[in-house]
Image (cartoon, rainbow, N blue to C red):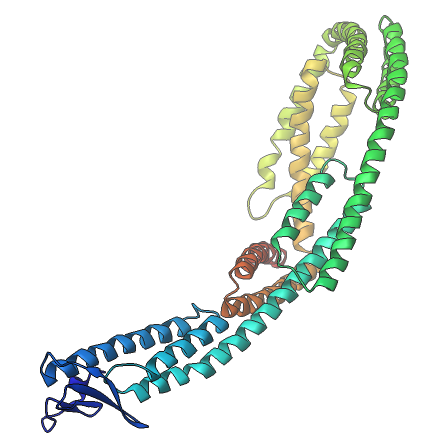
Length: 426
């Protein structure tokens, strides 16, 4: 605060509570240790002399205020803050300025305990980060060791690279702990890489073996392609296909060519069989007409399953009678089979669905399990919310984001479980 702000009506222009101007132009400042000269201003008036040295005080007070702000907001680390306080206090003590220098020094002294608290907080924060880093690295090691024992050759290598990138992004721990965890992580990666290389070497051998097997299967398939024994030959082709799949892949440059020959032999046989079956289909047209008439009766049962009081027992009895007539009607043309069977199956599914719904609504065991699941999910969400509140209070943005995503997922699952419980109790 400047000297003119501290003066009152009884103070002469050349005298203030914090300083004065002597007749020879020497300017003095008053502190708790007494007066000391801070300079001279011989060319101006006493008022100008006091104003000049008071302006220096105002500038010094501005520095103190700025340092207070920087320390209070945590923009300086404790060592920088302490050094700045020490340097500025020396400047205040030796200042050639007029003002309450004692108060300025006291304000700087008051920052020391604040810095001590910040130092302690930062130490705890570093310890917490170290603990979190250790936990994350232990998770990475555990996953790497699990991958080292797995046979996920396609994704494992990529996943290990991802784990390595995450490891590098984490803060280092104390040397002994960090080195021990790294040795486990590195050992796991090395073990996986060796097993992966051995796997692909074995696979190369297996592909050569598969090539010989598939060449034999192709010859067998081509020999059967002109057979007219439809049933046994179709069964033999199924056996050949199982052998083909069991043989595994051959080298890429021949696998597709062998498959094309194998498939062409099958197509020749099944094409001839389809032509023969088409002749039979023409004989089954009358059966299709009989089944269409049965379908008209069966589909007419569906409205009786609707409404608040469906006639389930009556519909089931009549459907069984129609189903017997359906079986007795015999085969239908192949191009009509899917359509007709699909329509009949739709009626059967409607009856079965109503039966299942009736059972589901009266199953107390499922209702109890659904209520128990809702209770467990609600407890889990409460626990997750507590963790989220704690992370928010700690200002841990990364942890907050993870917990928010987890909480949203669990709440969605809870909503589904509640709906299911309402259905069971409805």
